[in-house]
Length: 254
Image (tube, rainbow, N blue to C red; front, side, top):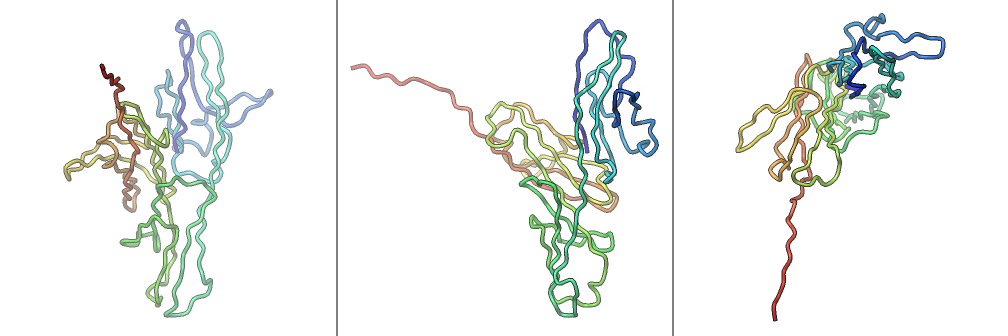
């Protein structure tokens, strides 16, 4: 997950140090997360620490649920950012019926406490390997007339895309697309593609992609690809772009 962050400071100040931390109090000196045991190799500063302070947490764990704050110290003063709350929830897989006999149908349901974006693709795995042609927009996966060959450990993951601002986007505006996934193993790379005339070209690498000066041609054709060590999932994106019409007057002379 990426925690977006930016900051400014007086032009006559010089940045001495900048870091994220999770524990604070009147009698506590904040510690840089990158030096805290358990976070080394688990977090990454994406920003330049001069104006962009975006933090990336990889391989999310339930224990990462906490309040996060950014701090920077200049040649003249110490500054703190507002706390950001991160809640990590687990994905639960339910099976119905819970006890199965051969030739029965089994329904698997992927549930999460998170509020998911409207564009969500569910991926299904058996013994850690993707089940071919199992991607669906529904959290339900049905095994028909099961046999001993269906024995295994099943799991699910969801990948979603959000569009900000939501709703109608006027031509000429900017829009940010965000791709998220709770895949296990975690996603290690997000890539954005655009198709035009049946040709796909890469547009951006990263979880977020901002399109500036958007046009009606951007309504469709964008895809987010989420890649982990097992495989990749691709999700199409629809952007509700409306035309920006010029106003004019119509006058009649009698």
